[in-house]
Length: 305
Image 1 (cartoon, rainbow, N blue to C red):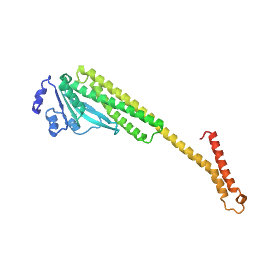
Image 2: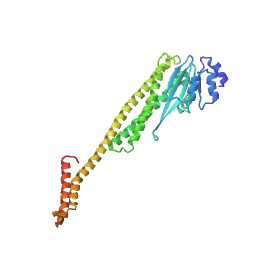
Image 3: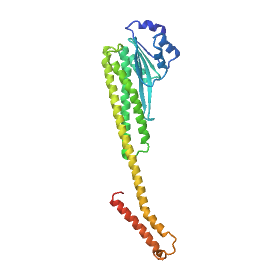
């Protein structure tokens, strides 16, 4: 549809327009301003990436900033893909900061089954619902990673565990930072006060809200579990350090009397009876061995080794 026909097309409330603008040009931004008369601050938000999702309501439309979160399990990296959405009574404009397969997949479904795109609010629901479902999939993978980390901590194979734990904790913190405002957005869309969401669509948005709350609850539990795993890791490292210190202490304790005996007979006094004794050398060795065995027996009796 040519830009010049959009205004007349939207005058008919039975018509429905969905624009998905990828890799926007200046002409696209100009269209948002001159054809749809969106606020300059909204257009400015489309030009730059916002750190947090948000929702703004105007007289003739609603502006939503949502985040799609993807997770690369091999690189252990989380990425937030911003999706800006303009929702009117008979139009919806999706404005991703980069192409999103969720939108393209849903567009293909609409071409096969036009009933999926009967209203703008149902298009919005389908897109947001798909994004929330991906959240649950990411959380499932984090559960698997935490199980592996827990196994590493229990078995003592913690050489790289700390780095993995810190990364995962950061991902969970960023995830929660993104999902909390999105929870509020879905909650607002699920209430009947919103003039751009039909009564039929409210129940569907409440279902999406339930999914968001489930994701929020899961990530909170995972953060608590990660804290427990981290504390277990610190305890394991502390125990290892204590074992090392105990071993070094035992060795040092054994060598204290040995060093004393060797130092005693190493003094250069002229009159030391044992120095002229035929078996003096062997006697010193016997004393050293006897003292070492006695100390080891004492430590074992005290269950220090």
